[in-house]
Image (cartoon, rainbow, N blue to C red; front, side):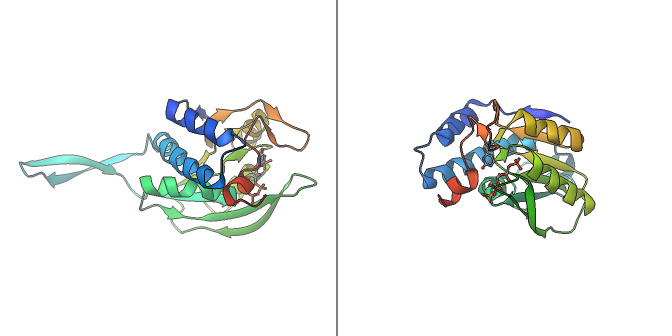
Length: 207
Ligand code: PRP
Ligand code: URA
């Protein structure tokens, strides 16, 4: 597994704004969309290309296009939804799947409640969730996708903990992780420190 930390200054600047507790819900959503676009550029950096003959106004040429079946963007509900629009701006033809998981408040274990994916199992899956804390939700989501036949999976998050990275590495060594930050660790409620709080609540204004 490769861990890619996206250190681009624009991503880091926007992440700082996201982390600030005074950032409003409206601003939080806007920033997430912008970061998703910037990170999407890195997540898709090595997509294979094919060449087709086209005509420019001056002559014919062999020109590059994205090869084969393209991408499925798959948010882990709810918070993963915050990264979808930015990715769809970059890849308008991407399909979108959904995986519903929430962390039980007592046990912090993921509880599964929804799964809907498009066909075309050979497509690249970009699984989105801003927070990789214990890694339980991401690992369960990846396990479910693999059981369904998807094998080309990348995980895009925003803030990861060392514990979450280890969980994905141990359980799914074939899945690359893209994150804007690797934070210190988890508190006694399994929230990431320093983190940015509860991503779902901050995106949807539910607290
Ligand atoms: C958050 C977050 C991840 C999960 C991370 O979701 O969006 O899905 O927790 O924690 P983990 O790595 O320890 O599993 P939450 O359960 O709060 O649900 P929500 O997105 O619906 O608010
Ligand atoms: N889920 C969140 O939204 N934030 C955390 O820090 C951990 C889990």
